[in-house]
Length: 137
Image (tube, rainbow, N blue to C red):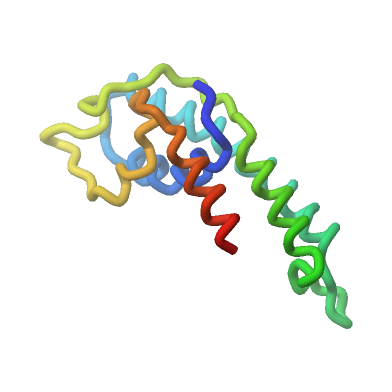
Protein backbone atom coordinates (compact mmCIF):
# COMPACT_ATOMS: atom_id res chain seq x y z
CA UNK A 1 0.00 0.00 0.00
CA UNK A 2 1.39 3.39 -0.95
CA UNK A 3 1.06 6.23 1.54
CA UNK A 4 2.77 9.59 1.94
CA UNK A 5 5.92 9.68 4.05
CA UNK A 6 4.25 12.29 6.28
CA UNK A 7 1.44 9.87 7.07
CA UNK A 8 3.84 7.09 7.88
CA UNK A 9 5.89 9.30 10.19
CA UNK A 10 2.73 10.43 12.00
CA UNK A 11 1.63 6.85 12.58
CA UNK A 12 4.86 5.17 13.76
CA UNK A 13 4.26 5.57 17.51
CA UNK A 14 0.64 4.44 17.24
CA UNK A 15 1.51 1.31 15.31
CA UNK A 16 4.32 0.45 17.71
CA UNK A 17 1.91 0.89 20.63
CA UNK A 18 -0.76 -1.21 18.95
CA UNK A 19 1.78 -3.93 18.19
CA UNK A 20 2.43 -4.37 21.92
CA UNK A 21 -1.07 -5.82 22.36
CA UNK A 22 -1.76 -9.55 22.10
CA UNK A 23 -3.14 -10.63 18.75
CA UNK A 24 -3.52 -13.87 16.83
CA UNK A 25 -0.35 -14.90 14.99
CA UNK A 26 -1.56 -13.64 11.60
CA UNK A 27 -2.25 -10.09 12.85
CA UNK A 28 1.02 -10.03 14.83
CA UNK A 29 2.92 -11.09 11.73
CA UNK A 30 1.25 -8.40 9.59
CA UNK A 31 2.05 -5.71 12.16
CA UNK A 32 5.67 -6.89 12.50
CA UNK A 33 6.07 -6.72 8.72
CA UNK A 34 4.65 -3.20 8.65
CA UNK A 35 6.94 -2.04 11.48
CA UNK A 36 10.06 -3.48 9.84
CA UNK A 37 9.33 -1.65 6.58
CA UNK A 38 8.44 1.57 8.41
CA UNK A 39 11.72 1.42 10.33
CA UNK A 40 13.66 1.29 7.05
CA UNK A 41 11.85 4.36 5.70
CA UNK A 42 12.22 6.14 9.04
CA UNK A 43 16.00 5.62 9.09
CA UNK A 44 16.22 6.87 5.49
CA UNK A 45 14.20 9.95 6.45
CA UNK A 46 16.43 10.68 9.46
CA UNK A 47 19.58 10.33 7.33
CA UNK A 48 18.16 12.68 4.69
CA UNK A 49 16.99 15.18 7.31
CA UNK A 50 20.40 15.12 9.00
CA UNK A 51 22.10 15.69 5.63
CA UNK A 52 19.88 18.72 5.04
CA UNK A 53 20.67 20.07 8.49
CA UNK A 54 24.38 19.74 7.70
CA UNK A 55 23.84 21.39 4.31
CA UNK A 56 21.91 24.35 5.73
CA UNK A 57 23.20 24.28 9.29
CA UNK A 58 25.67 26.04 11.46
CA UNK A 59 28.16 24.67 13.95
CA UNK A 60 29.50 26.19 17.14
CA UNK A 61 33.17 26.62 18.04
CA UNK A 62 33.43 23.02 19.26
CA UNK A 63 32.07 21.64 15.98
CA UNK A 64 28.64 20.75 17.39
CA UNK A 65 25.70 21.21 15.00
CA UNK A 66 23.50 24.06 16.21
CA UNK A 67 20.66 23.76 13.70
CA UNK A 68 19.56 25.32 10.45
CA UNK A 69 20.80 28.85 9.77
CA UNK A 70 18.03 31.41 9.78
CA UNK A 71 18.74 32.51 6.19
CA UNK A 72 18.35 28.90 4.95
CA UNK A 73 15.21 27.89 6.84
CA UNK A 74 12.91 28.38 3.84
CA UNK A 75 15.08 26.14 1.65
CA UNK A 76 15.38 23.54 4.40
CA UNK A 77 11.64 23.41 5.11
CA UNK A 78 10.87 23.43 1.38
CA UNK A 79 13.03 20.34 0.89
CA UNK A 80 11.51 18.66 3.95
CA UNK A 81 8.02 19.36 2.63
CA UNK A 82 8.92 17.82 -0.73
CA UNK A 83 10.30 14.81 1.10
CA UNK A 84 7.08 14.45 3.12
CA UNK A 85 5.06 14.30 -0.10
CA UNK A 86 6.95 11.24 -1.32
CA UNK A 87 5.14 7.92 -1.48
CA UNK A 88 6.38 4.99 0.56
CA UNK A 89 5.26 1.43 -0.06
CA UNK A 90 4.13 -0.42 3.05
CA UNK A 91 3.55 -4.15 2.42
CA UNK A 92 0.04 -4.64 3.76
CA UNK A 93 -3.40 -5.47 2.62
CA UNK A 94 -5.80 -3.25 4.53
CA UNK A 95 -6.97 -4.89 7.71
CA UNK A 96 -10.35 -4.70 9.33
CA UNK A 97 -10.78 -2.44 12.31
CA UNK A 98 -12.02 -5.48 14.21
CA UNK A 99 -8.64 -7.18 13.64
CA UNK A 100 -7.02 -4.59 15.91
CA UNK A 101 -9.78 -3.61 18.32
CA UNK A 102 -12.08 -6.15 19.90
CA UNK A 103 -13.45 -7.17 23.30
CA UNK A 104 -9.99 -8.16 24.52
CA UNK A 105 -7.99 -5.25 23.08
CA UNK A 106 -9.02 -1.72 23.97
CA UNK A 107 -7.03 1.32 22.86
CA UNK A 108 -7.26 5.02 23.57
CA UNK A 109 -8.38 7.19 20.63
CA UNK A 110 -4.96 8.86 20.42
CA UNK A 111 -3.55 5.61 19.02
CA UNK A 112 -6.23 5.30 16.36
CA UNK A 113 -6.36 8.83 15.05
CA UNK A 114 -3.57 8.54 12.47
CA UNK A 115 -3.70 4.93 11.33
CA UNK A 116 -6.84 4.93 9.20
CA UNK A 117 -4.64 3.96 6.23
CA UNK A 118 -4.06 0.62 7.94
CA UNK A 119 -7.74 -0.08 7.43
CA UNK A 120 -7.82 1.11 3.84
CA UNK A 121 -9.33 4.52 4.57
CA UNK A 122 -8.61 7.55 2.40
CA UNK A 123 -5.52 9.37 3.65
CA UNK A 124 -5.24 12.40 1.40
CA UNK A 125 -6.20 14.81 4.19
CA UNK A 126 -2.87 14.31 5.98
CA UNK A 127 -0.67 15.84 3.29
CA UNK A 128 -3.04 18.81 3.11
CA UNK A 129 -2.49 19.41 6.83
CA UNK A 130 1.29 19.20 6.40
CA UNK A 131 1.20 21.72 3.54
CA UNK A 132 -1.04 24.11 5.47
CA UNK A 133 1.23 23.94 8.54
CA UNK A 134 4.32 24.58 6.43
CA UNK A 135 2.73 27.58 4.72
CA UNK A 136 1.64 29.02 8.06
CA UNK A 137 5.26 28.95 9.33
